[in-house]
Length: 116
Image (tube, rainbow, N blue to C red; front, side):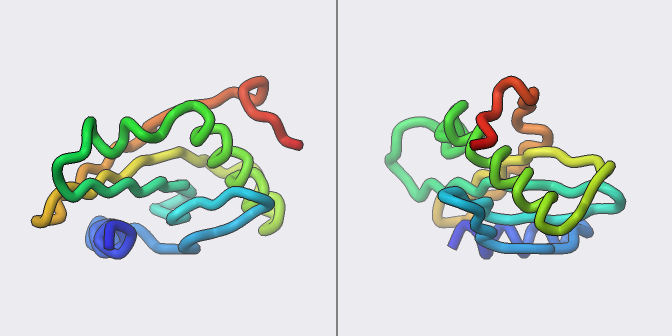
């Protein structure tokens, strides 16, 4: 439910959806999109009600590293080089499906990522 809501939201904002549930090795990226000349790797988190904290709080450093590894795998497999990329988180909350789009939700340096 959350991913479908996020896709609709992104399309309304002018994003082209390139991939959904892209898998590489043991990781997955929920949505890979493009807007203008930038590729965006998006993690979607959903919260219906009653859960502690906000959904985006569940994207810790281990998850960030995993997303970065999968993103590198995607770029290499598609022979995409010298392109601007970013990591976003979309939080879908409640029965009303409120969408919160956090652009540039995190940054990682090469030293932070284990490419094995």
